Amino acid sequence: MILSARDIFKSYKDSDQVIEVLKGASLEVSSGDLICITGKSGCGKSTLLYILGLLDAPDKGELEIAGKMIDSRSNLAHEFRNRDLGFVFQFHYLIEDLTATDNVMLPQLILGKSEGAARKRAQELLDYLGLSHRLDRYPNQLSGGEQQRVSLARALANDPKLVLADEPTGNLDPAHSSEVWKMIRDLNKELDQSFVIVTHDHEAAMQANKVYELSEGVLRQDG
Ligand SMILES: Nc1ncnc2c1ncn2[C@@H]1O[C@H](COP(=O)(O)OP(=O)(O)OP(=O)(O)O)[C@@H](O)[C@H]1O
Ligand SMILES: [Mg+2]
Image (cartoon, rainbow, N blue to C red):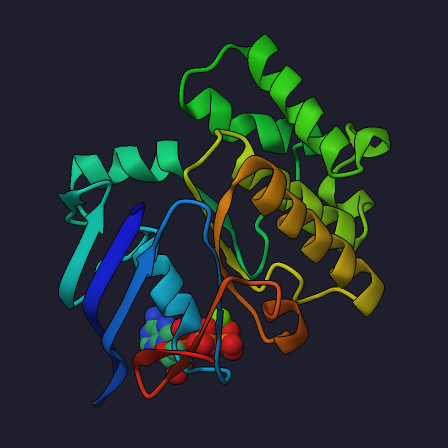
């Protein structure tokens, strides 16, 4: 087991009212899982992914990672987030004044890898994702699909145990979307890379080994 979330609660205070978003959501992620989470807009998918990724703390509930209970605000959580988790954000957040290669190098340099090793790894990944001819482009010189693949490369840069992706194909046309899904599936099959992916795309979700729907603050497994 890579990660287990039990009975996660999260609410937001909005001026005078409290919005309860998560009301006891639970999820277990095992090594090699390709998990998809679907659900209506605004139901709390991004909120849940941020909590699973230790980027935000739940109000209540337990997170267990690699057999240890984790407080999202602790140093251990910080370490785990940098070393073992990769993120593909809903709005991809590539750094605009860094090239594709430099964007993929950055998380590696943060972990203390040498520049040479980080560059080599970045180029291998971008090559694997079909971007060897785009290494020195800046994000605004890349198509939406290319940017999304750079984001995926960045998420994979430190060989994370788990990649958390929030609508990684959200801005793509069907052709580019199926291209990115194929890469996700190949990474999962060939390299046993684990994923938790939020998506609206029910057809793509069919490729997952587990599919959940988030509704009324809890996760229910489909099928
Ligand atoms: N920082 C915040 N403060 C107040 N309310 C918030 C905050 N972040 C999210 N919300 C609210 O919490 C709910 C869940 O938001 P969230 O972004 O998790 O939804 P989502 O399922 O990812 O939606 P989408 O599919 O549109 O991306 C929404 O009603 C949203 O308006
Ligand atoms: Mg969202």
